[in-house]
Amino acid sequence: MQNDFYSYVCLAVMGSMTQVLRAQKVLSDAAVRTEVVKADSAHTRRGCAYALSYPCSQENNVRTVLSGAGIRVRDYYREDAR
Image: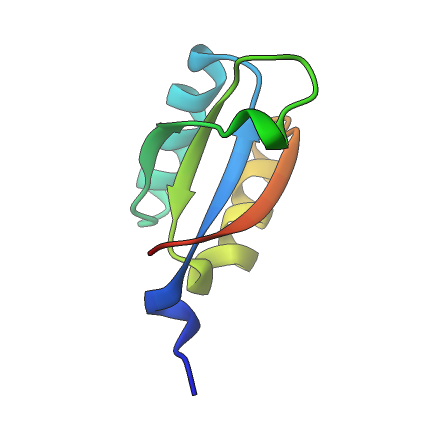
């Protein structure tokens, strides 16, 4: 049986670096550790986009915090960490 924490990372895709940095600050204030990454073009409809990578165990917290802060997220998805 695989442990989701180690085999997957979750990503929140946003349209600009400014949005990503704002989201990272808001999540940091909520004690959620994130990393800025370039989103895979297969998950973006309009070319280049950036995302925040975070532990999937924090999925509900991330969605709640970003929604409460009024930060628009294009898409959420899981990615194989291997």
